[in-house]
Image (cartoon, rainbow, N blue to C red):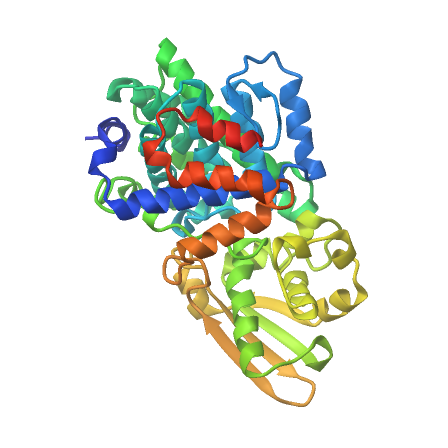
Length: 451
């Protein structure tokens, strides 16, 4: 059986009653994490453009945008919410794929579930299916796709979104094959922004989510596509020089991606997290301030050298969140690396800038050997008094090997959402997510999302 057909059969056959309780809990945790992010960052100036764009379209009032009173079409809601969810470097990660499934899959699934008045159980099924397909296909493409300039979230995202939407809309396996095939033509997203800036990368989650909804609708109407999109020589493998199709189907239906998700602690590129944890560990055993530091060497993987090691002097918040030396300088000077630390004031702080000049990122062979399954880091701090401290972190906080508790995830969601929504209103959203399996109509969740 082809990989494409196997995936379509898996999605069509997935049932809520077959999901063990821990998978349901993981799924609800990831939905809450994503919705907290969407609500919190919805007022960022670079993301308000998404709302301005979709409100300019001819919309049926089908689905909700976070923090916006009006409803728009499901496709447009998914676009805006997906941009929100990926818009401030706090969204979840499936490390082997180097991709962020939350903003893509959750945004597409909730928009269509709200439009079609689906149940909460159906939404959980859809999110599990979407994470599985996006994660596995992204894993097959990684890490080569990154070196070729493709962004994993938008490269594999439409495949996950179409799986989630196809599940919600009841597509049979034959139609799902074509939905996956059509979504392959929406798989894209390049990363020149890492070198020369621009905010479009923040929209990749929304672009992928909307693409999956469109692909599912076209397949339902009868459009056909190549039935070997996942394994054929000119299918998605065109984005990778090291394509490994076996990971798409190995253990499919036995080990689930949704149980192996990394939930971010910091509002920064994922390559920065393990070094940031290492700094905290060192600081706990030897307290220090910026003036005590002579030099910091960060050992990471080769991709980190290219992605977060190359932006030595960021000029905007996006670059700030993608600069290893600035992010660690922020961590040391301000004693934190949370979402509220990434401000124009801190970007231009002379103390952060001075310390950043003494922080360097280099390839570490041991850390590089873990990539992409694990994104670790080694930090070596040389102090002005001649002392040296070193720490190696294999599993940073929030990864499957060092997970946050459900209570910690809720605390994060509340803190981020507080940028744009009152605690009382967000409590309603939390209650809807926590009781999702009992909801008869996901519109209740959508109402809470609008606030």
